[in-house]
Length: 112
Length: 114
Image (cartoon, rainbow over all chains, first blue to last red; front, side, top):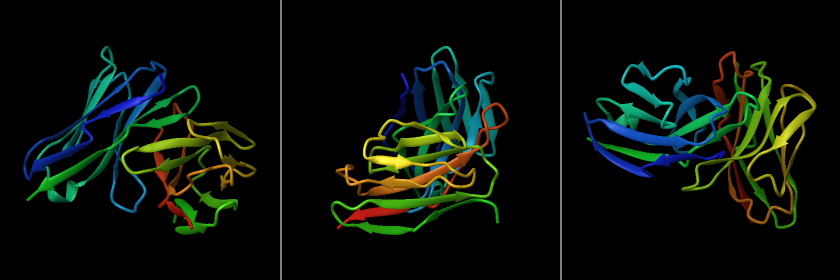
C-alpha cells in the first residue's frame, strides 16, 4: 500500500517529441505528488509537484496530469530536448507522517 | 548558501566496519530523510525524521542507524550488519507537510565496500 509504481523503466524520444511517464499509487493518505529529475552522479532536483485537489499543473514544457479516482498521475514533457535526458522519479508523500516514497525511476533519452 | 551538505562524497569501507555518513542542512527544515539508490531500484527509504529526537524506520532500515540530536543534522551509520552496503546514499530535507513540501537533496555519498 506504500508503493508507488512507475512506468516505463526507460524511454527513448526524438527531439521535439512528447515524453510521457506514468505512476500509480494505492495509499489514499498521500497528499503531495512531486516529480524529480536526476542527472548522473547528482542528487535529484524537484521538477514539478501537484496536490490531489488539482487535476493538472503546467510549468513551462512540463505538465502533471492527476487522476484521483484512478490513483494515477503522469508527467508530460512537451517539445523534448536532448538536455532533458535524465532519470525521472515520481514520488508521493503522506501528510500524516511526512513519509516520502519514490517510484523506481524512468531513464529518458532524447535523441537529437 | 542555503542547502544540504553531504560528506564525504566518496567513502570506502572494509568488511566488518561501521561507517557514518554526514548530512547537514541550513534550510531550517523539520523533516529529514535518508535514501539508498541502487541501479534499477530507484530511491528506497532507509530512515526519516519529522522532528528533533524522533525518527522512524523506512522500508530498508535493517543494518542502518540514525540520530537526530539537532535540527540541522541527521547522520546515518551503516553498520557491519548491512551485508550489501555498496550504494549511492542520498539525504533530503523538507518543511512540514501542509505548508509546502518540496524535498531538497544533497549531492550524495557513494559508499563502496573494499
